[in-house]
Image 1 (cartoon, rainbow, N blue to C red):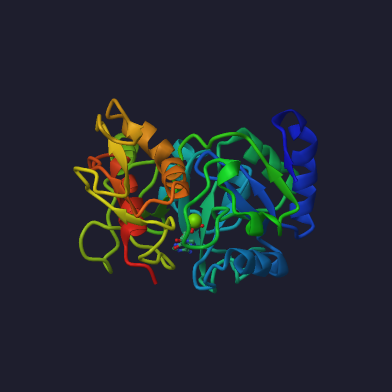
Image 2 (cartoon, rainbow, N blue to C red):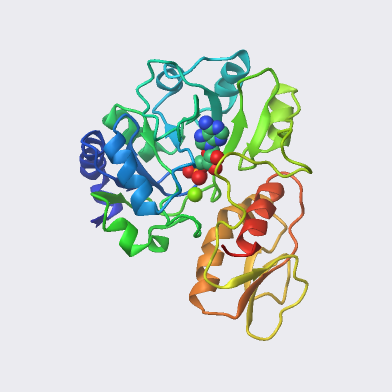
Length: 315
Ligand code: AMP
Ligand code: MG
C-alpha cells in the first residue's frame, strides 16, 4: 500500500515492525528509494535478491540508524571514524572488515569478509531504522539493471507487489546513489562516485581519494558493478550536442533541449533530476535518449558514471 504523507507515522511504525519480521519494505532515503530487508535474516535477504533479480555476487549496503549501531558491526579504522564523524548521517557508504560475530548474514555480504555500511540522513529513513532496531540492507528499489527510483511513481509494480509497505516521502534530494569508500586502510579508496565528491572529502579531511589498483583509468569499481546498469528501455546516447530524429534530448544548460537537467549549470540540481528525467524521457517511447555533455567535475563525475552505464551495451 502506498500511503499519503499525512499518515506517515503509523506506516513508518508498521514498516519498521514488518522489516523486523523479515518482510520487505520500500522507503525513502536522501539518495534514492530503497527496498529494505533485515540484514540478520537470510530468508528476507534471499527474497530481496530474488524480487530485484539481483545477482548474488553483488553485496548489499547495510543501513544503520546511527554511527554507534554501524560501528558495532565492524573493525573500526581511524579513517572510518574520521569519515563517519564528518559525513554521517549522509550519502556515504564505508566498506570495512566485518566482525566475526557480526549478525549480518553472509548472503548480504555476498560471502565477503567485508561489509558496506551507511547511516542515512533522511528523517523518515532514520526513524524507520530506529524502529526496525536491526541493520537493514537496502539496495535501490528497482529491478536490477534498471533506473533507480527517486519518486514513488518510478517504482516497478511487480517489485512493489512483494513489499509489505511503501513509504512515500516525495522526491529524494540527492537523486543518485551513495558514494562508496573503502575505509579499511589509511587512505580513502573510492569504489563508487556519488553525492559526496572527492573534492568534499579533500576539503573536509585534507586527504586525497585514490582509485582501486585493479581498475585502469579513473573509473571506480566495486564488486558486482556491472557495465550496463541504470538502463532505461530506450537506448542512451551521451555527450550529444544536437537532437536526432526520434530522440528525446536531455540538456545541461542547452536552450533547445526537450528536458533540462539544469538551465543554470547547477550540477547538484542535475544529479537530483537525472533519474527522474531518464524515467520521463523513457515513458515517451523515443528511439533513443540523447543527453548533453556534463562537466566532469565534482558530482558531475558521478552523473557521468551513471550515464556511461546507462549507455553501455545491454547484456
Ligand atoms: P547498490 O547496488 O546501490 O545497492 O550498492 C551496492 C554496491 O555496494 C555494490 O555495487 C557493491 O559493489 C558495493 N559493496 C557492497 N558491499 C561491498 C563490499 N563489502 N566491498 C566492496 N563493495 C561493496
Ligand atoms: Mg541500485
